[in-house]
Image 1 (cartoon, rainbow, N blue to C red):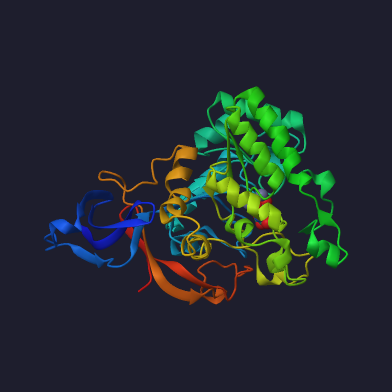
Image 2 (cartoon, rainbow, N blue to C red):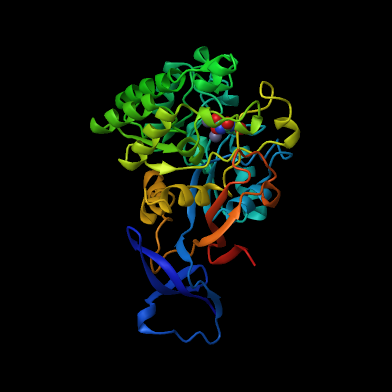
Length: 428
Ligand SMILES: NC(=O)N[C@@H](CC(=O)O)C(=O)O
Ligand SMILES: [Zn+2]
Ligand SMILES: [Zn+2]
């Protein structure tokens, strides 16, 4: 007995949709048939009616924070993966800035075990570049790889020493895994929480300059060229970073990059006041930077979209902008935000958005998921492109409520998520 998904709208190309019936048996996509050839015999099978809704490969998010172990008051693997499922994600890659950080085989094992027993989506862990993310000593890359990490990163902080980064890249290159970099030069940031721009000027605040990010991007591109590593840039937010990555790609350097919905949709000029739900790292930059990120995504300089889902407790976010931690949640608003603001407005095709969240992340990180094909594992997402509702953090499956998008009226809400042939979330 399998599951027939009937009358699903699948992306053909551009904005063109085709109606398909899809049979899932066990954990596999058994057949995909053209609806024009008639209704299949569904006797003995479960039927899911997807009429009028988009069926896409399960969304993939290569940059998320699950907070487990150590910060379970912010999120757990159980709540974080449910939040991901609700956002239409079926594969997520989690950052190692937990407590303890993911810098030992035991912690990798803990995350993988917990994901298997309590998680509802695929969880791929990253391991730290340096022990405790302190930037002083490299972790055991070989042991972490054997334990199952898919790349190395000190996300949350930048690797300050160029020599340390070069050693990390050389080692990662020798064992065929990528280095994923949070790009931030601490000496240029010191205590600021917003970028240098209209908001910081208006309020007389010290601003974070664009160079604090781009200086690392430039440095690391040169180190990637020297070592031959696959270098992936986290949460690109500045015009200068986009320019450097574009140039590096033209030179054939193995660099890839990601951008978050908030850096495509918000600038520092949108910050309403001293509200920590608008505090994230990197900060919201100027409208010019937002434009550069959009252009970078459109011309392929930026390869993929990620959420950087970064839940914090309400109590932590209420400490005031100086003391509150950086970060906003992202799983449950990512697709509706980008669909409503870029696809429904005619700026991007639906195919472009779906590819940036499925096929391309799979390609960049060498995953077998990300496409809709017979014989593949059934990781699927049904999205209601027409349903319109307001962002309401009280409805989130995440423990985090920290979002600047509260009250935004959006379309394109995920309605049903399947991982490995099992329905892990359904609107009804
Ligand atoms: N993005 C954030 O603002 N915060 C992240 C860290 C990070 O992604 O650098 C976090 O762990 O909270
Ligand atoms: Zn980061
Ligand atoms: Zn992050």
